[in-house]
Length: 390
Image (cartoon, rainbow, N blue to C red; front, side, top):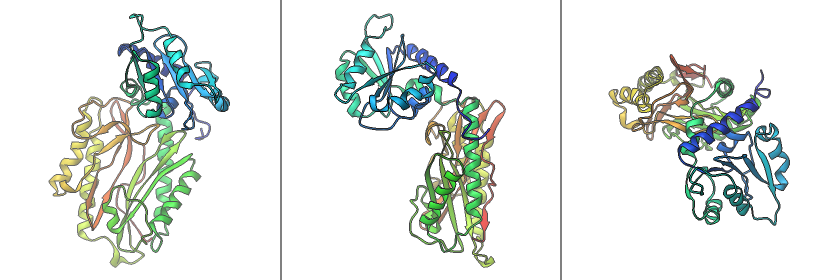
């Protein structure tokens, strides 16, 4: 099946809506109020435009789910998977209407929990304050909280359709890495290569190319380096960290290249090769540690212990990984202090790095799915140091 043809089945949105309602009831919520963003797309399939006009899913503890949308966006709202399947009712508002008052009326007019009064609502985490504060005024008796307390439980564990989309995105990104590694690289600016990465991601089926880190020479020691006008030279590394969205689901892969310019005298020296060997072994150890029931911090520790033992502990300056799905960074996070246990279906990056400021750095990153018997690596490209002519 091609990426364009694959999609989450409409029935799945009904399951997600009911599960979100159930989890909300457990937390004694009277309604979930979900604005534009990944939560709305997860529950309805609607990728709404992030405008100053209110678009919001009102999911009450009982009664119908309603999607509030500006009248000028009625057509895309009604064509989203959940609305087209009759799972949510689209309620539109015109330019002179008060959409906040409309949202308040829908919430207040819905059947509430057994208390018989409106006590608590949860709003999506990234709902703008320009909407939250008026909503609080419109629902004066309600306690407000974050909807992530409910939705993270759903979104962290991917179903088979989501994993398939993540896999397709990963394979597409792998092909882009291979194409960039084939050159040319030497003599080009980081920005030029970054633009090529973005073009290739889209050509490989991504709707968006969200980031294309091309960090050469001493810039490779900056994990989130912004591609610059620096020209790539033979005899130096490049950290290539790329990704975007394909079918709504993210890709994120990092490989470290070394450019020789065809001159064997410009190949990596013993120090960089040792650093890279330590990094490769740390990434492999963290990946091998993935199992259901393991705390997220144990994956971080598996990588960090090996890097520290080799004397590079202070040079590993970020967490080992982050969840991925409809957002590039989402739960779970693989970091010290996160005791949450991994579960089958969780998808996340494993990306340790070693960075020697002012000199060079390296990072290796794959997207991994936690399966009943261990890790499933979605990225297939070699994790060895990619020494290229450039």
